[in-house]
Length: 509
Image 1 (cartoon, one colour):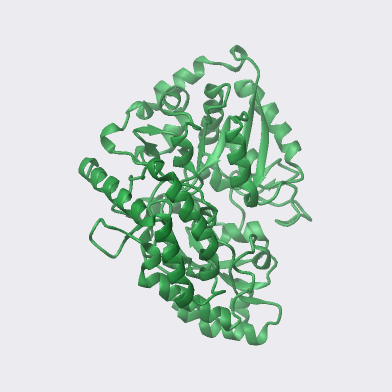
Image 2 (cartoon, helix red, strand yellow):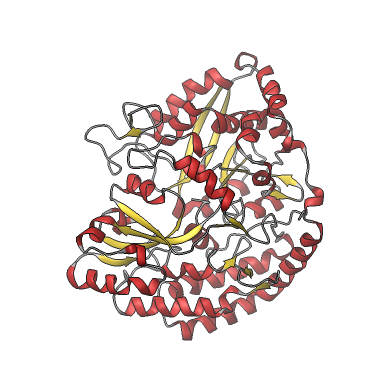
């Protein structure tokens, strides 16, 4: 996921607030305590000395797995021995995530561990005191966290000098590109190595349209459109919420209105052209799942890519796909793509951190949480590789989770179609990625919550229709721009610029 831009755009359009400012001069050193000190502190608290406690874990899911209870029970047996805790897993479907979690927070419902992200209200929840600062907890109970995560990745989550979310140890860079149905690529002998811009696939889309009835040439999904290229790291650092971003082609650290840019208009026009040519599904502005792609009924789609993304999605969907990067080099914009937080309503934040720490260092627990029960939901091929049991595939398995959401992803099993060197390539991917000039900056939206919410409402009204090609961009982009200005986007941009300038003066170079 932060993971991934499509979902982040979707969430923004329903009014979620993003990010917060973190001048480096206020950074604490507590989270950088040595692993040995942290481990000693954790070891002092053996499970026999702890009272029993049930942890409530809240996170997003594509669908609720039918075998959730069986996996939860297995985790509880394991966790009772480790930290004398049990868990209640509460997955929430993506489509209702914002509404349900906002209500849970507003009503002070007990939550011990909660998924969050820069694009899922992280700074908003920090601003209203919904999340606890984690620095002291990491120092005392997070030895495996600090061992897995480089200090710069933890520091990138700070707001007001404090860490409120633990990022998943996964890829932090991103690169835009496309996923293709491999069966169709092979059938028509398409050479995707020569695809360098979207226009290069238009002849392919026409061939699919002419010869494959029932196949969508280019699949669009709410929040994951072809024109996502226009608002992504190919051109902009969106600074967390797309309401003013940095033009990455400019040497100036200047915040601009992404939706007034020529690049946004150009991609929207191309989307309109494809929509009218019937290359795209007509419900691209509203469809929320990967149905057509997963069923093998679509040829291509936009995706943020990483090493092995195609193999990962092939395993998840049960349909072989291959990837093509459209940008030569990845870029790291932030480390808040996906995180876990401890809400203030936790009645045992120490135990919550103990649980999170296990996800960064305990391979058994992490893979149980991610893939389910060995022999039922997967079978081991060797120490690092798993596959589905006989007669089971990605569409029939009774349990699945999202490994990119949790802990140290580099401890998780691989499927046979994945590169055995995937995690080595992830590390190289992170090390070699370009860095945004604003990496480490997160703006504090607390003083402009009304304007951010109003702009979110405007985006909800226009953005998906424009980006899917459903409407004429030359008519509707001016309406979007006027609506955003009326809602206060210029005030947001000015405040972002002010905070960014202050951050630049204090940030380490």
